[in-house]
Image (cartoon, rainbow, N blue to C red; front, side, top):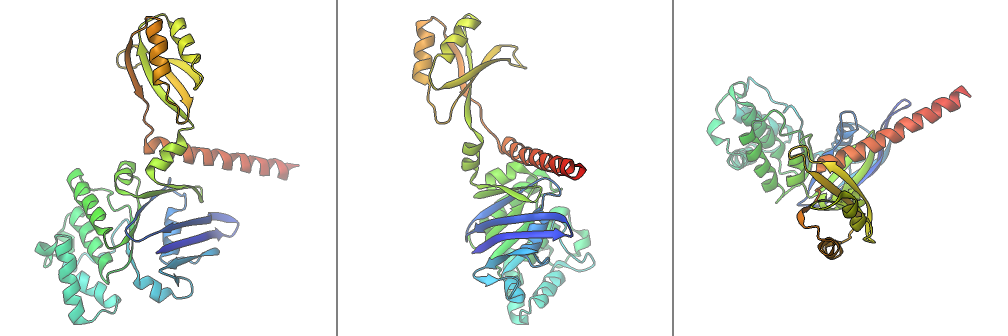
Length: 328
């Protein structure tokens, strides 16, 4: 449905994004993550044809955006971080204006306004000035405006920023509901929402795409070594010796639990390793009863920080190398 093929954007010698590629199919929610200035907005602006790429192309349903911009824009609904709303208009006036911009007939406009208002539960505020609406309702009006024209692709930029917990829950449910008929690109700094909402996650760092996978896939990639935490009774040296004799164990570290003060053995294993049988047998034979054994979960926050910090480090090394070359 959406194909982004090696798009790059340069401002003189400054690179905003470079060779970013990904695809999105109908019915998918794609999460777009990255720190401030990483290239998320540039990527979204190129997809919507608000910016022309220095290289690369974007297709929406086989329509090349750069060659057929008007046809492509008909297929896009865009909700910026701050919805573009006229505060002195009523909700209905705003939506009528959006219909005129899309060149939708008066008869069809009435039908579509009715549909999106019912869909977003804003029928009760159709006659109210947008100026008098809460932020949550303004976001809903922005959603409704993006849905005018029944676009195949929805691009949502930080749609949950500034909302209270109840509003976040309601809009999260709405986004999931919208994917039944749309492809959705969701940019957000709320990583927990990306984790529970998105089918795939794309991570940008300093203008480069550093990850494109499902959450489960990202966790698997990030976990080069599985980590388990063990609490057991027995001499420290004996416990470490038993653990490190297991072939699939890479190493074992002792750390103190900050809450209980108990010593914990952090066991780092090869990916996919299962050491339960060997560990239980070894500790049982040595007379060292297990008090607790659990895996260490890798969160999306851990993955995001690891991916973006690694890229920043690489860029710093590249800049340092260039500086040394220039000096020489």
